[in-house]
Length: 331
Image (cartoon, rainbow, N blue to C red; front, side, top):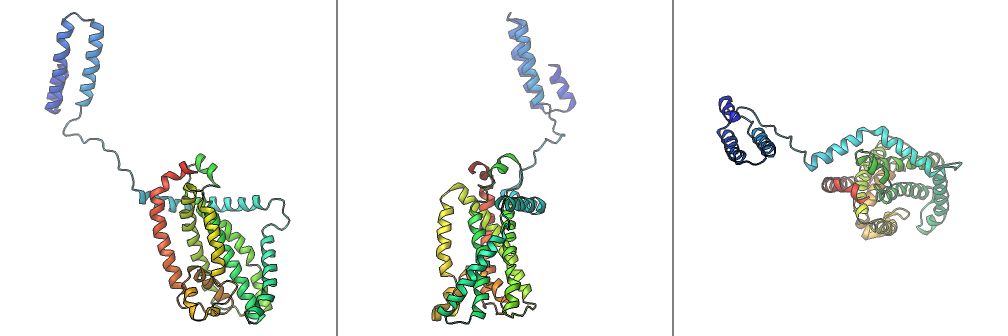
């Protein structure tokens, strides 16, 4: 009763005072009926306290409002940006992966370089005669094609394992999920840099001039890195949910290797040449290989590659925003 009076005096809503008065009017007759006073008094105090707390908000006071949770798109973008800012983390993880992979090895990742060099030398001497081209022009074409293809295929195949290989970190350390995609890209570009060690040797042996077109090849590598990020996120999420995706992708890449002008010249298709020119895999190889061997990039290579990159980024961003919260449960 006293609280109801004080509530009316203090400017509380009339509904609060009414609820308090009705609660007090319900308990007072029951106390007078002879029920245990302690129990009734405790119940009365509890109910009056709850009613008093519920009705203590005045119309003049602003109610406490919780800040709305950010949307999925905002959280996904924040994850990508925060992961990119922590470059020291994913570079350290990539270097650690390289040390673990080649632990106890004398040459480390240079074994991949040596195997690539042997393959290029052996295939170049034979396939140059099969395709009726000169060895001087075919070996650089083949060598750079294989080096760039190894980068692309590694980004795709290891992208399927982006989150499954980092399950311990995901389940124990709260870091952005995009860090693991950046880690895969950085690790593969370290191997790619080791393979590029044979490029200066080829430029000297085959007397290939190096001019400003080298910058075009560097831009192509940057676009490949961007594609590696979205491929790692997209394939990583799907492969985490469906474990059969990784072998399916590996089988698909084996077929794509023979359908893409990597070791055979694009002119060998004749009237079917446009089929290869509009192949995104060939476009990705062409923007890096052509400038380094002193050739011109195909007219539609940059356009197709940038279009494929934009489409892949858009689809992956939506997919990442939609299923980002489930990655930790799927690994």
